[in-house]
Length: 79
Image (cartoon, rainbow, N blue to C red; front, side, top):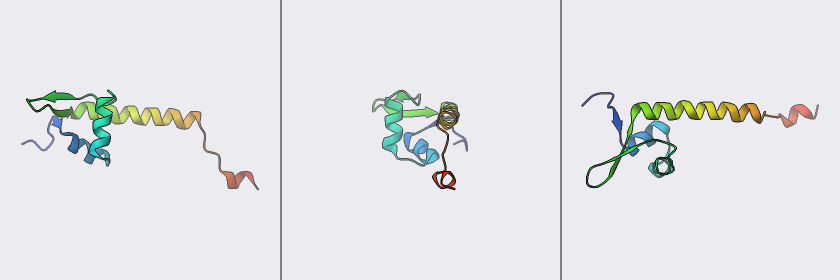
C-alpha cells in the first residue's frame, strides 16, 4: 500500500480534519466535499486531491469571512 493513497475513507478524512466521521459524512452528503461511492456496500471514498481542494476552499472562505467581519477588541475600545 502506498504511503500516500489516492483515495481515503471517511474515517481517514475525519482524522486529517480532526473531526468526527459523522461530520465528514455530512460534508459529503451535502456535496461540500466531493466523494465517490464504491462497491456493493456503497463505501465512500474521498480523493486526496479533492480533500486538499476542500481545505483550500475553507481557508479562502474563512479569509473572506474574517475580512467581512473584523474582530473588535472590546477591552481596547474601553480605554
